[in-house]
Structure formats: C-alpha cells, structure tokens
Length: 139
Image 1 (cartoon, helix red, strand yellow):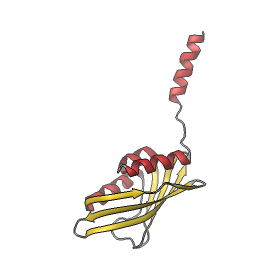
Image 2 (cartoon, rainbow, N blue to C red; image 1 turned 90 degrees about the vertical axis):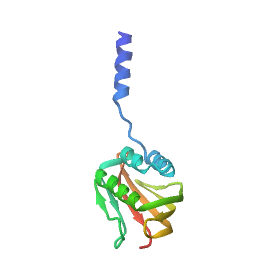
Image 3 (spheres, helix red, strand yellow; image 1 turned 90 degrees about the horizontal axis):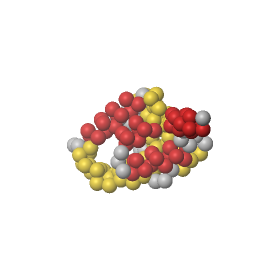
Image 4 (cartoon, one colour; image 1 turned 45 degrees about the horizontal axis):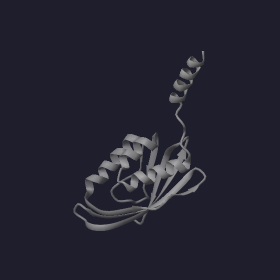
C-alpha cells in the first residue's frame, strides 16, 4: 500500500507545473537575452496571446499580438541585421506584475551602417507568463 502511494505521489508531482514568480520570469528572460536566445525566451516564457508594442511612429517593426507574430517579428528584425558587434541587458527592476530592463545593441543594419540601439523594455507578467512587452526608444 505504501509503495502504491509513493508511486501515485511521484506521478502527481511530475504532472504539476509550477507557475514561475515574476522574479523567476525576469531572471530567466534576462539570462536568455544576454545569450542572444530571444526566440527560446519567447517560446518558453510568453503566453500564446502575448502582445508586443513598439513606440508610435516607429520605423520598421510594428506592434503585434500573438506568440507566432512576435516570433515572426524577431525573424524580421534579424533579417535586417548584418552584424551584431556587442550587446548588453541590465538586471531587471520589478514592480508588482511588471519588470523592466535596459538594452543596448551595437550592430550594423543592412543598408544603414553601424549604429547603437538603446531601449527600455517593460514586460507584464500574468500567471507566470509574459503577456505584454513594450519597448521605449527614440524614433
């Protein structure tokens, strides 16, 4: 009887998926971004109906809704990049169900030359998943 209980407990424990805290989501997203693993971060940490918001009047990339559209947006951005020379992401700052990071990329864009992109990204988290990312930068 004890063996059956232990077996049942193992099965039950393996099927329970723990919801990540905002700190865990923020730390994991930051770590993956620092490694350049943006799509992996999106697939792992974003909800299927997440939205990605760009500043009004932003050239190039536009706001989108849905994980597939966010991943495609990342591919579209990568297709415009000739080379990434360096990048950095700050540690996250958390307030309630949101966190923010600052990111800097030194890159060469196809047909535009080398430039330094600086932005603040704010993420909203619900039930352990990113439901919104919003970028702030000069346009």
